[in-house]
Image 1 (spheres, one colour):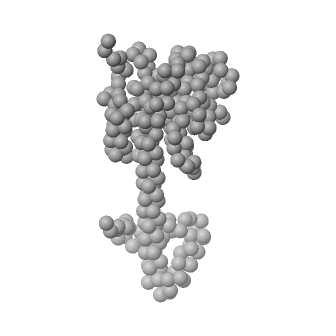
Image 2 (cartoon, helix red, strand yellow):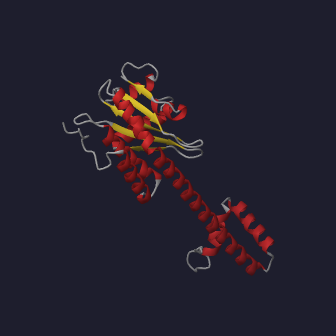
Image 3 (cartoon, helix red, strand yellow):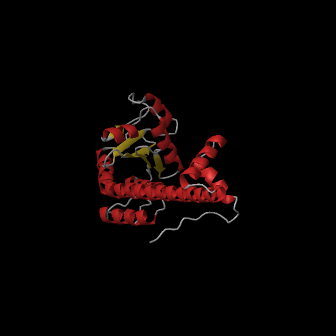
Length: 252
């Protein structure tokens, strides 16, 4: 008998091809949310059966950042929003406690009554949440939904946990790349702000024939008087010269 294939499954249908596909996607993605959406789509293709498709979402929790919510489609992302906004939910429990959580029938499960009512209202009967193995305080879970009660039997729970094991490294890399990218962007913004302030100080020094410290104090006083940020006041001073926007140049 020929092996059964999953409906809509791409070439990423083995552990190796899934990993290669996601690593390629990671290199091509412009941000972590784009990568998470593709990860959710791959999960949905991998875990669906012919004529019995599931929806998948991911909820990524990072310290001092808004939660990132991704999905295999618009409906899955809406369900992910319910996971995050509910006071308690399988997805949040799986992420925080790092344990697999199963809701066999949302209409009968009493652990998350408010949540269960919300997802049942979206036509969902069974939910499976599997945590990713991430580092530090970063947490995430793959949450899979089905309109059929009892959908996630042991075979499918094993498949979901195996998928998460295969893809946890790719998600860790995505989170790390996002951190480095955000750090670089913040540094660039800081340097650009510093450049404008230094130019404004130089202009004040030339106009008032004062020292650098005196010019900086005058700039701070103007910021306080106008109740405006120092960078904004400095930009207005530089812009008044009419020489075009300030550009910060980087070597390398």
